[in-house]
Length: 309
Image (tube, rainbow, N blue to C red):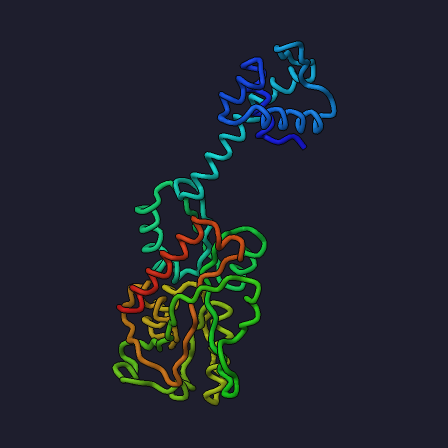
């Protein structure tokens, strides 16, 4: 194994013509130069210098190694500078994946702060709902995933549901997002302070993403009925539009409602309270990458501001 430090010594010896002159140039002792040259010749498996009195001249192998050393050391210097830039947040990239309501609320604030503080760091964004976003993280298609999970609706259960699915990841909790009920403005329950889920048993329902849809069914069944889902869409503005047109009722996370201009819709608090935990996920090794760590910190700040609104 040829080491870069040995190549630097070889170049100094070749350029100055002696161990003592090379030592002065490198700022070390002559015995240190001699020792490193012996180590380099052992690694190369052949003599690199011919000593004739006080003079040194390169062997054919030494000449070849000096010729390659220039490119090797230049490439290594460039690599060191690039890594230093990434470590110092003067360069680098973060590939972020987020669910839609997170993309329209938390992500813009966080990315704007990153661009202002670290303009050399490039951040890309694609949208995906969990569990697909979590799969993308594990498959190496992103560096950071904004995801959510619902608490269990079973009375005997404690803690968030599916907690084990993220055991191999770094989980950074951001905020608790409460679900609110949506009814048309002219609905009998519009303007009510609180609405029990059982009061909506006979209503047609508009459901959201597959994970939200499953959770809606669980919540309704916990309230003693199975919802009649007339429409299902992953698009939150479409959910709001359908409710506003009087085609049914829905429950949506507050982040989703915040991201949509709701027309003809009234929001009501529902009981029992239904919440989802919004988190940022990454891999343990990626969490130590400066650009990823900085983006995580900005997402936490954005979530803290959102929670106080």
